[in-house]
Image (cartoon, rainbow, N blue to C red; front, side, top):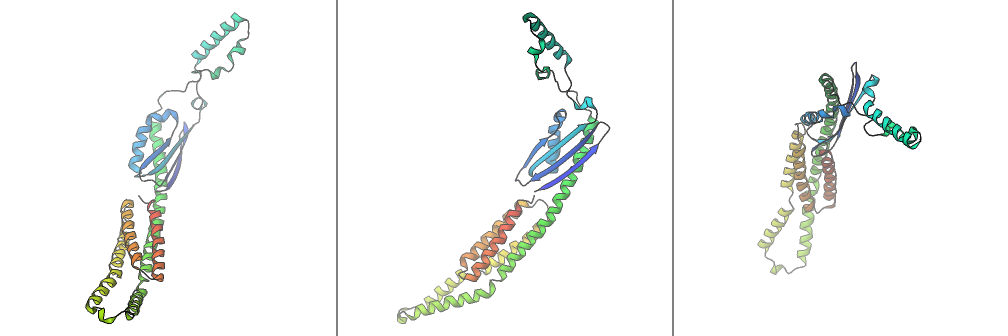
Length: 285
């Protein structure tokens, strides 16, 4: 789920700033930016973040600013620079031209500027990881706050679906009477002697049972109640997805049986609330 956290720290040698943020994703994907001289710690850092964050597209940026100039700049390899200067001076003397005309910018020559490959002190890394943990604490607090909002949104949508479902009740008896009346009018134009009344009653009962939505309403309420339980548990994203699928099946079945314009309107409104739930499920771990 989405989250954001940042933290800063300072030692005698450097200041460190850590920023951690994530977007929705079914899997854990970490994009990591850190100074070159600490990249030998990348695998260790990735393993630690995988323990802390279950899933999401995560960006972790670690910025370190050293206080001393010798720690900030890239050192000059004097041996390499001296070698190139001597060689260019010999060529210039041989052809009677200036060395500066041949050399250009000595710092553009490969290996003249050579990053310091000295391994940093382990104590510095321990401090950096403490700042990373502080950033994660802020990140996790952000997600917990977002989670409380999501719980409220899920509960609100589930309650709305139940309210729309209950609003169907007054129209159920009305539509049955409408169907019966329509059938009576149709039958009035037929030869009554050719009608088997017992068979007709059986067919009518079967037809009306096919339109009955009580079972679907019971199951839909059970799914909504179960969702209310699950949203307060941890790591429930997949489970909520399955519940939403089952809710969708019941709502679609109710819609296919509801041959009444006001009932169909309520079904559309239930589907609208269900879509809100499905959109927010992506934000749940």
